[in-house]
Image 1 (cartoon, rainbow over the protein chains, first blue to last red):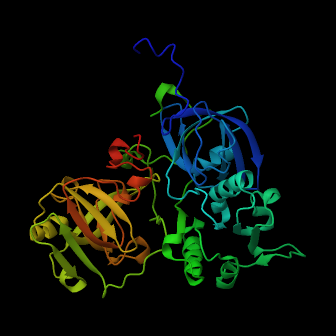
Image 2: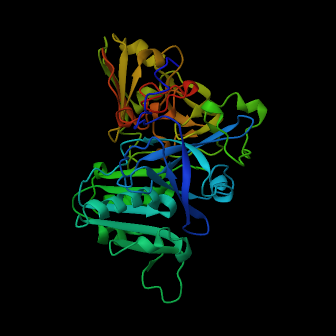
Image 3: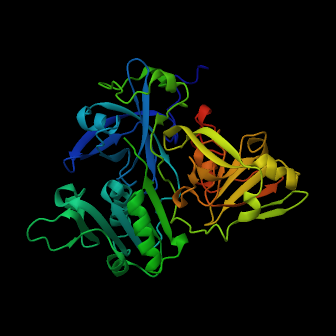
Length: 243
Length: 205
């Protein structure tokens, strides 16, 4: 300390510095998925699609880090929402699911990475598999708040109706396909995404954002190429195991 | 290690790495048995018959090798640990290929930096000192099998002492230069050097 630190205001923006966030709200999305609204002491606006790193520290100093996409719009000042899919064999996502309660603190830093981000290009096709919908939701939410007329479609593949994340927020722009089981009377698509489904939603310009498991992203990318998307228009984010 | 002594309430750490392996994990990394795939776009399709690799720019002898010519060069087995910036590390894996020292002996680089570029448009920048003295290879096999396409086949750069985005998949060539400029991820928020032992993940690290 040089003496100035005691009186100087903390930096309002500090990308990359670890900070201690407070869990303001927890929302149950599906049996395996919860969204965590975190209030940050050093918040800065993110680009929709960016991620934060989370660090957990045990009392003996052992640490575990993982990355999670931000699901909220950067217009929500001071907070970010992380949506965490529970992986039973992991150690960070089960902690979020089993331990964290509102009022708890969690160490985060971000926002990071500036490739899988939406900067207002249009029209936009979003293709998500499972929790791959999370960064796409940041894009969809931000578009709703800034440019609701901007053409944007979301193709979202989920295993079953109960595993659809953000179910109450999906609107006419969204096409859901259920890959394992569809409830009686289900009017939407079922089965894995295929070439005709992707082609029916494709735009002849603008970017496609594809996020999900590697197998999902490979399949979706190939269908997009078949539907006329040039490789440069296809941005992908593939899940490694992020337990 | 956390600054300021912050402890996560109720966190015990249930995926701890065995003691004998822990010291081989750089800070913030965890042990992964699989080999995850991370690519910014669709997977390029490059047939070995059409593949070639070129080293040019500020060099004495710009050189291009076809698949056959490349495979006629001395090959080395490369046992190594690899570390992905997304936090996973894979230990005790192996690749097979040609040392960049061998390739550089032919082309004679005249400057200190190189941009690796790939089929599909990916780039990543290196200081030449990270690519020489037995620290970098162009590899065509992984654990005894031809390098899978999703992992960069037919050939990728291998620089295991740096985060793995520095090991460009579907390698098409290296351009030697007198100045350093950021490659794809380096221009998109990731660290210019990427030393996992210094945890150089992002610009601000």
